[in-house]
Amino acid sequence: MFTRIAGRYDVMNALMTAGRHHAWREATARAALESPPGPILDLATGTADLAIAVRALDARRRVVGADFSTGMLARARAKLGGERGAGIALVAADALGLPFPDRTFAAVTSAFLLRNLEDLEHGLVEMRRVTIPGGRVVTLDITRLTVPGWSAAFHLYFHRVVPMVGALVAGDRAAYTYLPDSVDRFLTPRELATLMEKIGLAHVRSRCFALGTVALHVGVA
Image (cartoon, rainbow, N blue to C red; front, side, top):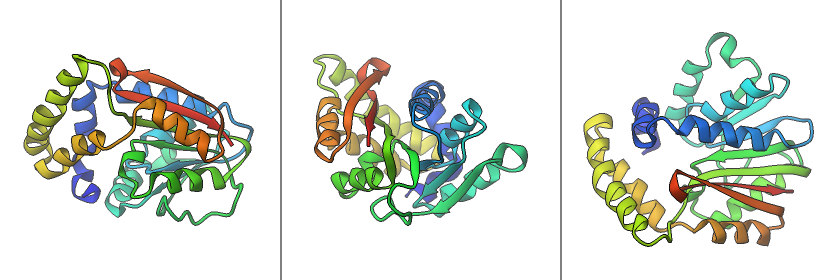
């Protein structure tokens, strides 16, 4: 599915978030750079926007962008041509079975990955496994709302407007129907923080954007 929509992924992100997704990724990158020196893994890198944001803030950091979708990686490689791609390596990888030794990265980041994992807890365990002690696990995702009134309005937008725009712009209504359905099945920010603590991350903190619809979580390995 993600390979099918790779060509219109950036455009759809801009439309759905009114361009705010870049600011959220920058905040995610800043949180990752609180980690000790060392390389950073960007899981579900997509078209590499978060990897680029990390390098823009600290050009000394080496970044590995990993994704399960070959179509997304192809778009990322095109975007990273020339100097923009300096310091960023791209690999195909499954987030539930990362091809890296324990304690490889100073930080592991992900943007809009967690809702798509078949086994969320195992995915978080893998992220922690490849992070050095004292490193950061940093996630950005759309979380389930619990605010009366606003929750209903967001549900209407996400379930009615987003699939329609997905059909018109990306030519894939099914993919953008899956997106709101995945949010309905996901956790609240508090539930996600609790799960991160359960798998051994310390000092877990969260920050919400877009009236609570998007949450940034940071835990220390």
